[in-house]
Amino acid sequence: MDYRKKGSDMIIKLPDFELSQTLDCGQAFRWEIQADRSFIGAYLNRPLHISTYNLKDSTFILHDTTEDELLGVWYDYFDMSADYGEFKRILSEDETLHKACTYAYGIRILRQDSWEALSSFIISQNNNIPRIKGIIGRLVEHYGRYPSVSDLADETAESLAFLRAGFRAKYLIDAIDKLNRQEITIDGIKAAPLEEAQKKLMAIKGVGPKVASCALLFGFYKLDAFPVDVWVKRVLAEYYPNGLPSCTKGIEGVAQQYLFHYIRNQYGKV
DNA sequence: TTCCAGGCGTATC
DNA sequence: GATACGCATGGA
Image 1 (spheres, helix red, strand yellow):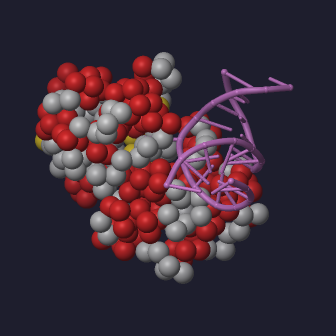
Image 2 (tube, protein in one colour):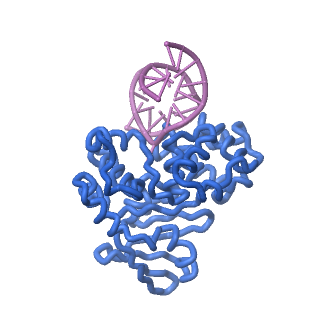
Image 3 (cartoon, rainbow, N blue to C red):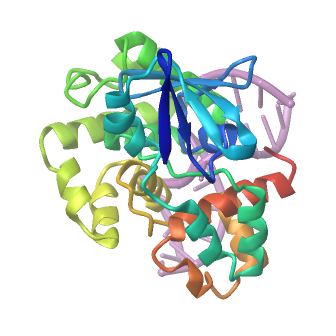
């Protein structure tokens, strides 16, 4: 990643990146596209306005951002240290994955906050993306920022009714309680290998294999997590009845993102 | 009106 | 362990 300062903005060169593919592909729910195709969103309570500077040479503008903020926050959030070109070369050994990562060339895995990702994907179950965004938007609006687990300590399923999250409110409460009582800890999940981490998360009511995998991939940066939802089930049934190809080893989650985006487009549902 | 949405808990076998 | 079914809410 190269960067330079331009006025109050930072211009960055980040290959293998496209705004809508990464910010509007269902891995994060707080980015809103603007009329000029730029995006406004946030990492925790730190807002960002990002736009494409020149797609041909993969340059982007982080508006009103300092060098310190770029290197201290957004470098990690956009996973700038990872070489997605190399990921795509590895995965392209498989024909379907080659098509998928050619199509969805600009997806990067966002390194989101652990609690935000966990709570977002609890909300996501049996739900659609616009409504997930609506629920999270009401949560952020109510608290004036994305609330921490301790911010939420006194909430109940009833007090969260304003979210209109339906049956998922009680699942959020169970996650809040278990984290606040330290029956489960963010650090413990971070330190655990995939299978054990998934098991820990699934102790929370409303967290099954899929929600746990999404939290681990997007919120704990476990690239070997492989969330299987209705779309990925279709991919597996159609292209991989005998399991994933060996080239996905260790980066199953990256493969999943390319495949998810690809199959949704195939069905005309992007 | 009915169906469906980045699933999961529960009951039942 | 596999398989049905209900679940809050809102848009199509």
